[in-house]
Amino acid sequence: MNQLARLPSPALPVPLLVAVAGDKASTRFLEFFAANIRNANTRRAYSRAVRDFLAWCEDAGVASIAGIAPLHVATWIEGQVQAGLAAPSVKQRLAALRHLFDWLVVGQVMPTNPAASVRGPQHIVKGGKTPVLDPAEARTLLDSIDTSTPIGLRDRALIALMVYSFARVGAALGMKVEDVYTQSRRLWVRLREKGGKAHAMPCHHNLEEYLTAYIDGCKLRDDPKGPLFRTVPNRGGQLTRTAMAQPDAYRMIGRRAAAAGIGTKVGNHSFRATGITAYLKNSGTLEKAAAMANHASTRTTQLYDRRHEEMSLDEVERIGI
Image (cartoon, rainbow, N blue to C red; front, side):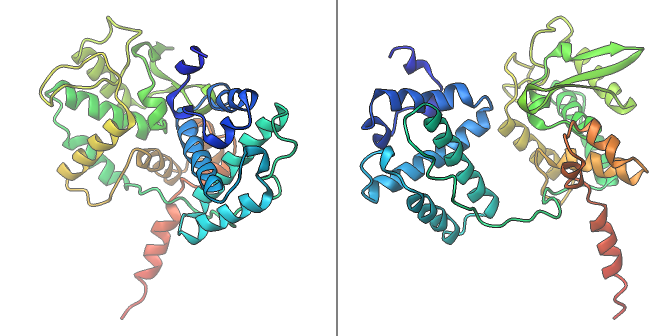
């Protein structure tokens, strides 16, 4: 049991309804989060959903996890909808229950999956909701950054990486110095996307300039195994050897956007959508955009294509009153 104590904290402690079902159920429950889910964000979200549901079941008088029925799942899901939780969030919570119970059924802890027959709320996605910048705003933001300090060189390089390579913030922050390399006389970046998929991209000439200035200006070449984007103890100080986290990037982007006078409330994901939209506006193809963004389907890429928003604005301006 000492080894179990070292499992990721989101999986501990075992909820009461699982514990009363026996050691086998408890071990299988922990294994679901520790061995079956590799993505830390998914693990946190699923753990929160499962714990909320099991706490609700306990309040409803369910004695053990083996006593959970489809009616319990359906009632809880309906409660989430009535509480105003967004449809995608409700569907994610239902998915967490389905996957957990599937895992427990395979482990012979439960005879059937009580969430298998429960339907979530309908949700049809026609377009993305992530705020994006137009090319002029993105250019203004990059040019507004003071690069006379290590933090300025870092921030410009990080934002440019997400714009020009369509990188997710998690993949960007997970890079090591050696993931920026030269091939065929061009600078390339190596990204590790969702599911551990490796994805290499040649650098746009602006990105090549910004990454080179950052790496050389901050003397990072001597530490190839170290994180590429690092924290700074204070805004005028030197880089540490600790990798930036997503909240660090989010706060940085907010500060930089405000300083540049940009009113759009951008976040970590905005630059991926900004880059894809700019590429498509310049006669890029959806298929190539999907490959560059490492999307399995062009349907996903279409969610980042915001050209229709400009068309809608142009049409609204035709109302000549």
